[in-house]
Length: 304
Image (tube, rainbow, N blue to C red):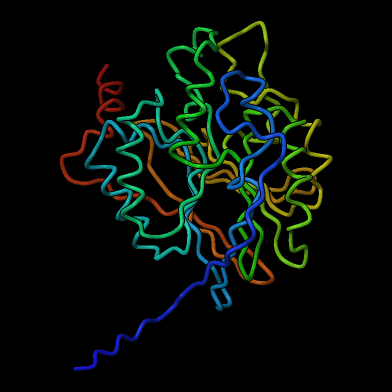
């Protein structure tokens, strides 16, 4: 019997010649080595051809509160699936303490989506929170190596038939971000949308104070160090601590905030539809399962 299997190919990911930044240290043991160069996953683009006139992305960020509510996490994943996305972009703070157990839970859920997942790292993802909050960086190398083992990239370029998606690590210095952009600029297709994704926002004037370790979640550079040098990007999208979907114009950029805030707040994802000539985005609220404890903290506050 001859079995004929007919498959419908909805996307095609091109293979590119893999190159590595010559400065990259494969097994860093110091912070200097850790921040030298970029690995091959970071500086080689992933390219997709969906052969359609629109591409759907689900993007969000600040997800670690879900780790304490398994039923809500399942509802979150179900809501993403219902959008039938081509990609899922998670913009930081997937874990709280950057433990193996937390990452195992996160990746198990993300694998259920069965679509490409890309990351812009948040401060929790790259650090051991309990250490950094005390102003220490003794195990910074181990913390970032754990993130790389799980997410593969601190930076990334993804391209398809409608847009260029650039993921940066805004926890780095502006100099290092610009160094990455100089590597990938020859690969950008400037006839298509140019969209930059980060976890910390690039437009709020919040940055670290070296004398105050409690400010470490903020980016380490002032916004003017970067923004004037990325004017060719049409959109800037971030996923940290917005608390609600927001879209506005700032210094000529189309800015979007897509991150959640904390337990007790309404949980949402953002659906972004890319067309040749426009981008449409809207929040999608996550229905809470019966008997959930997500709003319990807020309820306790109201009773006091």
